Length: 287
Ligand SMILES: [Zn+2]
Image: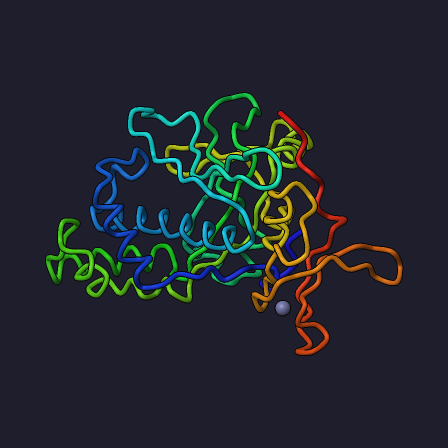
């Protein structure tokens, strides 16, 4: 369950990350669901996709996981399956799809996003077989419509287009907005998601634009700070997991009631209460 924005993790995105994401976006020619958009709106959307990957890779790498980026496959056309990362933990390799969204203008508060929004699961086939192990949802602070309007406005005013050099795009379009504005809000594993879909048969999809999506309420999804432990397969040596609050190593501890959790090693000295609860991490089953 996602309760409030304290459950989110702000991802570490730097100016260099953004410049590099622009360069990658410039090298991709075509993305199916962006074909009708203004070229700079489409450009920024691709940049956000790469930033989501970068932020998640950094978070997982710090937590002792090895990430392999899976390049977007233009040849797959109508994408039956979109895998962004393959992650090697202590157990088997797991595949991950990362969805990125801007804040919706009609639900701008994080509390509304938690209550009203879904992980953006594109429905690619009729049957509930999800080809990825883990789905991650990221939100960026700018508001969707307002942000797109501003982008078109800047493009018309300045004439800076998708082939301009990366730094010019960064500065002209104010991409520094992503540095403190990229949040990992929720994730869900395949088993939990399939279970969720089965509980609401017949009303487990919704439609936006020309795509269908599977329902998956963010509030029912899993907490960002649980992800690294899940990918490791449920248990790791002391010091491998880093505190989601302060970045210090975490250590397996046992509470008075016998419950086990990973706690920040800065507790009690600095009072940091960052923790990851063991009981809510089910280890992933085999395929
Ligand atoms: Zn801490």
